[in-house]
Image 1 (cartoon, rainbow, N blue to C red):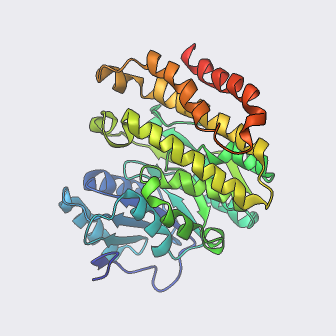
Image 2: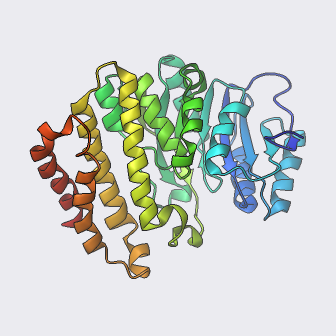
Length: 346
């Protein structure tokens, strides 16, 4: 036994897989087993591997046992069971450490990777070895529209402005993002994310995508890479990442991540790029708090109409203390109000 896991199944007969589908999972063995079975039934390529990383689950163990049994006769499954729960963020990062392929695709345990889409995304990565990541589109499993279904345009993003505007903040849903593991490791991004883990427990994948945007070209694609399954009802209650105070904390830490990433792009800090991406972050968190999570907050007797009014001064306070910000404050105040009002007035 070791720190990462007490049980480790065999690899693809000593040959590194061409692609690893990473499924970090905890206490949802039934969903994980169903997703694994569906991906195998849908014709998973023999040179690909599904890494199921069980984060020390204490519930639904029999289903994880079934996954482990499958891994004993099907080398396309690599099953690792950790001794203890190391947290979602650490489990996400350990997928990079425990995978053997150059290319990784992440999928939540209730979702599946579309094999046809994965082959096309893999071809994009192999044909463009400079790409650090590709964000694929997400559709509902069985053709059912679900909350995270989204279709991107097809574009390779080479300029740093495009990378930050169109990729960096659009990976809050883990399923459907593919990474070039070698580029991530080459730029020491795993170490950077590990250092910042206490501030990014909820969205380590979003933090990583922000950093990838700083060091390499990326791409977005209309190709459906992930099929979203049915989530549990208890995942949208007022707890953990969905608490209002936690949303404010996430915003501050993501602001800092954007600042860190833009510092990586050049010696001279790009103030205008940071301002524009900060405004995008304001817009996205306005949408998240005042629209997407509104039913949860109303149920907790929190009126998001007044929360929306509070967002403007909060967002302004989050940028006004930078030493260079004073010369932009008049315009920034107007733009922050617009970013919030577009959401709250709709």
